[in-house]
Amino acid sequence: MMCSEAIRAIEARIDGEISAEERLELEAHLISCPVCRGELEDRRAFSDQLGGLLKSALEPVKSTPSHREECVNRMAVVPLPRRPWLSLPRMAAALILGLGLGYAISSDRWLGGADATEAREVAALELRREAIDDQLQKVSTLVEDAAGELDRRIPEAPVGSVRDLAALCVASAAARLSEPDAASLPSDPREGARLLAKQISSKDWRVRGRAVWAFRHVNRGHAAHLKGLLANLRGSDRAFAEMVLQNVEREVEPAIEIGIESRDGACTFQQFDDARVRVMQTRDGKQERFEAASLEAFRAQFPHVVYMLQISGVDGDVEVAGLRQASPSVTARPVTYVSAVVWGASAAPVDQVVEAAASEAILADLRRQEQTARDAAVQRAAAALNKIRSVHIDRTAQFRLDDDQIRRRVEELRKLNVERLARERERLTDEVASLEVKFDQMTRQLASLRKVMVTLEAQGR
Image (cartoon, rainbow, N blue to C red; front, top):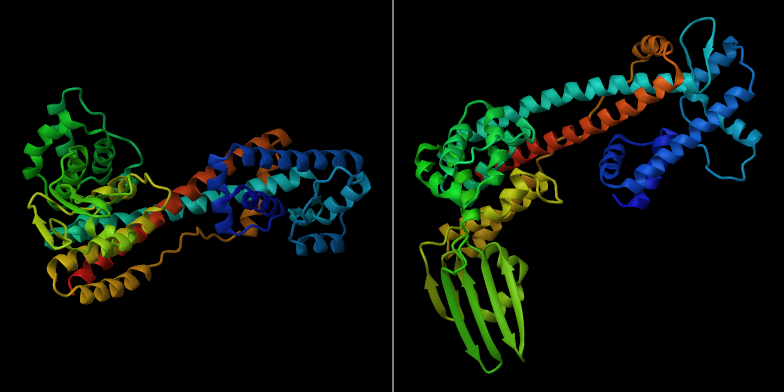
């Protein structure tokens, strides 16, 4: 969300006309944008100040049955224009028209004024917090079940990029279920490696998740000892640990290197052990450099280079301009997605990253299996991608505003003074925003698990 969009969303929020999805995007934007947070506070302060002025200027209004009925029926808040040239009478008229949140809690009086409106807002926030927290617990259970099912399927899946991606999704689910609470590693690399190997294979998702977070801090010292412990790990845990180690121990020297010289200049094709591809081309004294995570990704990103150099083959067995070279050390694994999928180190949400990685993984595996039938592999991968994209999870926390519940809570909140109500509103607003972000992350995590399950099924056909 851009700042200009955030300002419009802030206006809609103050006016009570913001959708649940737009509110979620706004709260996520406010976390990282102090300017827009200041704008929100300014507009709230203006509204509060105006309410205070009017409360002191106007005599209490005695309600009649027809007046109360009118207030209950009008449940929309009229926006308060923030313009310095508005006179007090005109502002008073705007506020009075906007008292749709004034609420009848007894048969004898009408709750008017800023404190009544704020009491109702605090009551609604309390109910929303409870509703979102309840839904968050439910979706967390679904994530745990889906991760467990996928974890059981991984050992049966064929070795390849799709299986590796599934292992990353299981690790990601464990991390999300445990929160970013990394296990503390001993200073001794040997002891640290043993602790990681023990916790990553735990049956407790929270313990396992803390180990997943701790893997961010693995260095070459840990890697040397972890290698000897990999044999004790099972399917998804072993695959995840291997990809982390592969990231840590990336070699500088290429496993495959093909050089080509022509009248126009020179060109060098390189592929490294982790399947990264690099092409360096020198023409007219200028050097161009093209890089991608794998041969499949290189084809997608630089088709003109592929056509010009007539690049073909699969990761670890490549032909460039008629020259062929192979290396068994090249392991095509989605190591470049480890951070984005597992720890969310990407601007894109995890379900979108998984969707992109899944299509590439399927195509890479199919092309390795069917090197002579590339067109058929592309068609099968496209069909699988359509199924992957069809997976949809509702990311909006739904709840129903119960008037009876709000009435009872308003009666209790009315015992608090205006300052206390304001503090409660701010605290609850922050808590609701935080819960909404967690709910969105967890539902996206569930979507990614289901997308990769579809990917495994598509690979087996």
